[in-house]
Length: 163
Image (spheres, rainbow, N blue to C red):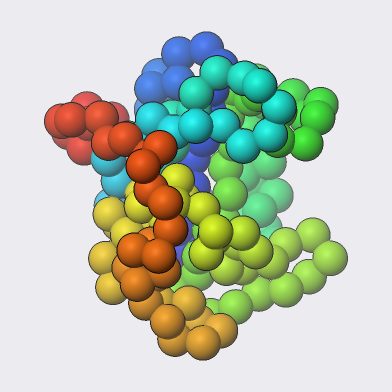
């Protein structure tokens, strides 16, 4: 069994409804052990609407590459069209972190290579695994988050119970 933190992001359509559908799909790959709050965040990349971000902790029997392929299929079913890098999207699902391990292949790097630079990914990750550490050097992600500007990461009050 593998514990994986999956990051969710969207800035098109009914973002919360899309997250609900994504979570339901993820339950087909294992057991959702935790859901983060929802966060409104500033986009990275070209001008576009604000994002909604969240994370889930998924316990799964899938290994890293099959999990990535399953996430791509969920994105496709939920309307993701890959056009431009960092462009607007109906849904984005990323493997952010795998409990106690690293993974590297031509198609996937875990922990996510930009995780330590992105408060919008770290904040939800820490909601679902508060004591998470970077498996490459043991540094607590909570310490990393305190060193980042998280001013544009706004928790939606009461959102933990609504999705």
